[in-house]
Length: 138
Image (cartoon, rainbow, N blue to C red; front, side):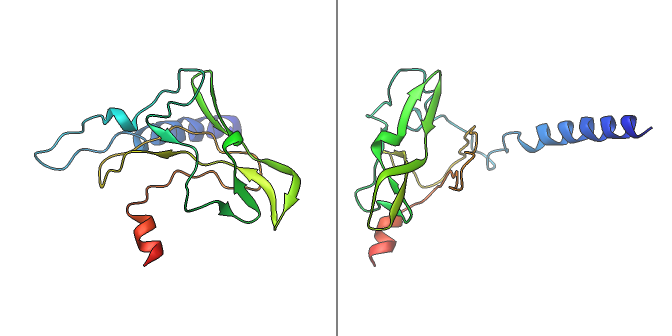
């Protein structure tokens, strides 16, 4: 009986999960349109640097992890942002991390990502920040 109960719970969870990941309806009178410069399937062997930057000149990371361009790669249809311990720690920076940002700014819309979280102590995030640098400097 327990096996049947667990199986039913698993099936219900899968059905509920699929519905929760459905694309939301656009606002009345509007439709979703793909923004090509902010979309990528990462099918090449390197990052498309006309769309993406792997640094932020105003943010080097947060100790203990520093953003390093060497932590970003592309392969097998995936963008990979890796984390590792620094071989030469300095100034409180003990780990390498990575950052990928769009070169295009957009104020609103529907955004999605399919990502696998890392298995380290560092966070895996997908941020949407608008005018962050202007607010930070104010």
